[in-house]
Image 1 (tube, rainbow, N blue to C red):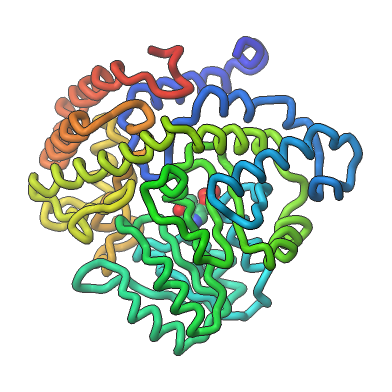
Image 2: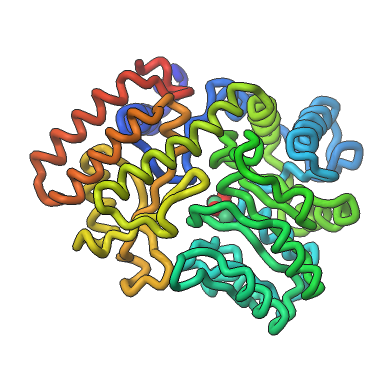
Length: 416
Ligand SMILES: *Cc1c(COP(=O)(O)O)cnc(C)c1O
């Protein structure tokens, strides 16, 4: 990065500091990851110079000889990897992908039914502060109060009562596998479209360790930068009959020109995701989550649903007499980075809720295995028992750094 260093030393220095942070910390934010050097190179390429509103063969500006091939390659790889009939790779990110899906099928005021935000749904699934909750009649389903699990009977009754045009399955903080067939049956009975937002777990689907929603859903949206481990971006996968509606909704409905450098990096990520080593990564993500969940439970932590089937877990800290925010801030000082999170039926306020969310994709990408997950659980226990012991926090941060020094993170190999 010699030229940034010379031209803009301030930004250069900040990037270098962030590189160090990502190298030296145990990153457990469930939506984050480390992309490969190849993905960094594609993202940083001169494809960023091009404008290409429209789709291959139907663009509004000339000079698309190369870009058309880039986009078609990304689409083909996504179709092959996920078995989808049609794919749009242009959404700038997960939120615009969801908004485009609504635009494709809904008019303002139409009813949607998604998982409630405090129960693990995403903002764009109908939260009041989001355009999805302001422009549509957003209805929501909640988790079962006794088990913390999705209750399909409740969703069915709600769907039959409110008659949504779209039912949304998918989440940002639910530790279990979804029953897509059941969602499909409910959608059919309620005469609704089924949209699955697999932003969090698409890497697990690609790696074959999570059931695929693609055969069941009318539309599947996903970010490309979470467990799928690509650049920041998104895709919409849909049945052929919806192809035109989706493409028109993305452009010109919601967006202008696609980010062609991102499209190229998505293509690279999809090539990586089709490899055997990606399958190993995906399987290890799930194994690591299981081991971490079991170790934490053995230490007296309360896990929502008593464990996990996927890449994340939700810990209710109520019995540890500490709020999620105090815990997350102390852990961050100790080199363990995660986020505070509401638990289902949380009695505390969203800005200082009772829980923390923990995910394993990023640490798995840098090579953590079962043994390290047990170590991580011990570090978490230690900090949560002593969140105000500044010496302990500083010493633990050094211990974390020493541990991390043995696990070169993808894209950051030059720091190891
Ligand atoms: C992260 C996420 C999104 C939004 O992605 P952005 O890229 O942050 O806009 C959408 N849906 C779900 C379920 C997510 O977890």
